Length: 81
Image (cartoon, rainbow, N blue to C red; front, top):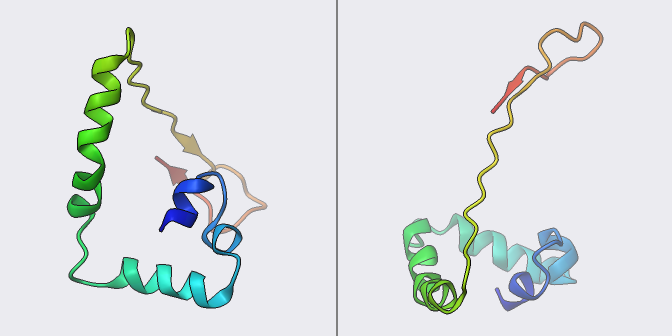
């Protein structure tokens, strides 16, 4: 998982560098015992620390909606939220 943290802009195959490492990451995410809330909880403390230390914290949220349903020559696209 450190591979992903070190390269947040990369896809899993790019960051892992090998098929076996990429498969390991996929198996981790598919594991029913691993919950998203647990993964986020492991980061919460350090995020709060950094936010408390900063003079300004920006909480940016994307609210873009795209509607491709009017494009007659494309298939498989529609409303994306």
